[in-house]
Length: 360
Image (cartoon, rainbow, N blue to C red):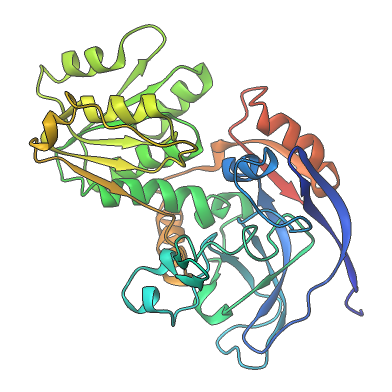
């Protein structure tokens, strides 16, 4: 059967408008792979794009969480086969930039008029066409395509390209040790994955901070030992009470607000680590008292979703082992033709939504 020349794609038009339109199927370059999307999803970052809070070019196909089947391989791509089930990370590093060769794949820096642009490894739905479409072109395919193990469904691996990798990075960057006490502020998809990652890293007391009942229940299901509802109690005072005034070893910020950042800093023990995952829309202010005037031996670390095929392989190993099951995070399912409805639901956080599965 001949390859189609046109496909459906969710396209950013202007702030407030992402629409489904026809678009040409991408041409495959020598180092690329064309992947037919079988399942994808919508991310909170896509909502930032929809609202105009994160700028992208008009006409760009959005989405950065692809699960699919290799349709066509570039002539230089080795080690893969057409028809193979694969995922690619939201961050798709080239593998040969200065940042990549320095071990910082997500910061695959791109030179511009004003120097290096951070977040350079995030290309899908940012600088190149993304995954909310019938097909996606994966650049530098040999650095990015990860075969899906037999027996794993699309929905089982759907969290690997972004939120699982990001949430786990929050736990990894926080350098959680066996026996640590960890607080995770916000239990949206990223925060839930940070909670699961903290448990895998060996934390023995994980305190989740949330107020949405469905998310509080999911946090307990996925690894939280205690859940604090910040609308019912001052989360800082409650966490200090729960830790007998000691504070937590690591606090993970998973929302991107001044308030949650301050709460994280305020609950740290002396020498504790604030691991920040949130995408901040405004300047942050560091409060003097919580920062101990800069003398508290604190660490503040930030993380961008690690990508590349080896990261994806490791994450799928975690799923395959049964140590973490994230399938319950898919709460809603839509066809690609219904993506505008899916955005309306997800952007307004209605009906207890966590993640939506989109199938062309």
